Length: 157
Image 1 (spheres, rainbow, N blue to C red):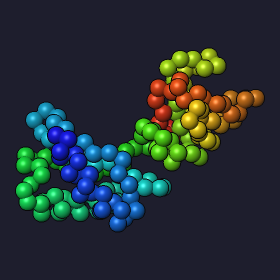
Image 2: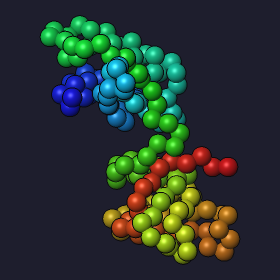
Image 3: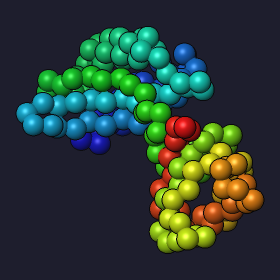
Image 4: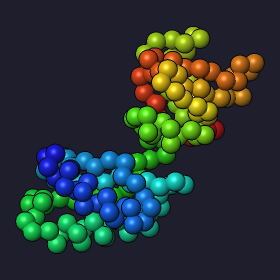
């Protein structure tokens, strides 16, 4: 079903550009007996429900007007935010998260821990620099990139 995903990406990109949103992901999946087309969008400052409705309406209209129909089977269209704790999957997403509070899971221990949270201060090819005043004397930590299993945005409590 990658043809569906690629077609939807091509159709939704101009809609998102027009509204200064960006595409986080598209998935077309079958769950039980139903198909779901999920489009995850975002913008600086976060997506609202009204933003999702706007994109859903415009995308639905564009897809319905296409001939031949790029998605011949019945499906549910869902447009949403990727979430407050969305994954940071690549360098571009990590760079965009500079200044944000993130959670990092490691493949092996660093300073006795495999998970860290803090504000992402910087990154380069070799390391991320996190800052967190709850760590006591050491308020910044350099995390080697080769130790990072997963990174995601986090909610600071």
